[in-house]
Image: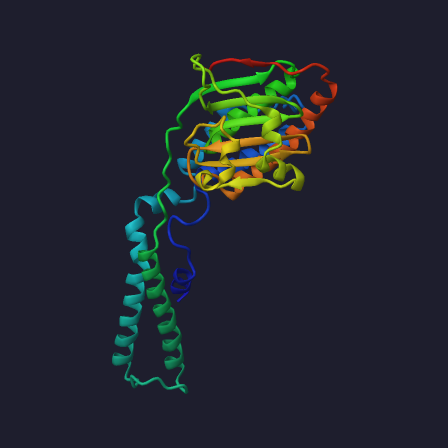
Length: 314
C-alpha cells in the first residue's frame, strides 16, 4: 500500500531537479560565497578555480546524483512500473476476494471490504499515474553551436584582484552552467567580454565591440537596473529586445541580464533555450552582488577611461 501511494504521488522520470551537475553547481556556489569574502578570492589559502568546478561536476555525474543516471538509462522500464503494479494490485484484490469466501460486493461492515476499497483506489491512481508517465516525456534539450568568434577582453585599468575575480567568474560559469558568453559592463566601460561574440563588420575578424552607453540605455538593461531584478530571456528569439544585444552571436538561445547595483549589468548567454535553471539564476544573482562590490571600488577610484585589451583565447 505504501508503494502504491509513493507511485501515485511521484513525479515523472526526467522532470525532477537539475541532475547531478546542477546539484554540484549549488555546492560550488556555496563554496564560492564562503571563499569570496574579499576581492582577492582567497581565504585561508582557499582559491577556487575552474578545475574545482569541473571535478565537482564530474563527481556529480558519476554517482553523486542519487541514482538519477540509472533512471535515465532505464526510462521506459520506470515509466511502466505504475501500470504493472496497479494492474497486479487490482488483480490481486479480485483473487483475494474470490478465495477468501467474502462476497464480491463491497460491504461497509467488513474490515476486509474497507481495506480492499482503499487498495483499489490506490491501484486505480497508480494506473492513471502510469498513463500520465507514458504520455508525458521531458522535452529533449537541444544545444546549438554558437556562430561567432571567441574572445576574452578585460579592462586594462582593472586592479589585479578584480581582474582575477572576473576571470574566475567566467571560468566558473562556463564550467558549471550552459553559459557560452559573458559580458560585464560597469559605469561607462566594459569590464569583461568573454566567450563567444558576434564578429565585427570589418575584415579583422575580431569580436564586435560593445557600445556601453547604448547598451545601458536600452530597454532590457534599463528595466533590470531600475527594478533591480534579474531579467531572464529564456527564448531570446521571441523578444524584440534581442536587437539590443547584437554583440552576442546571432543564434544565442537564452540570456540572463543581472543588474550590478545601479551602475552596471552582467549578461550571461546560453546556447540552449531555457538553458538556465532556477538554481543557476540564483547563483548568478549572488555573483552579481559580489561583482557590484568589487567593481564599485574600481569605478570610484578610476579616473581615466577604461581601455579594453583583447587577448584571443588559444
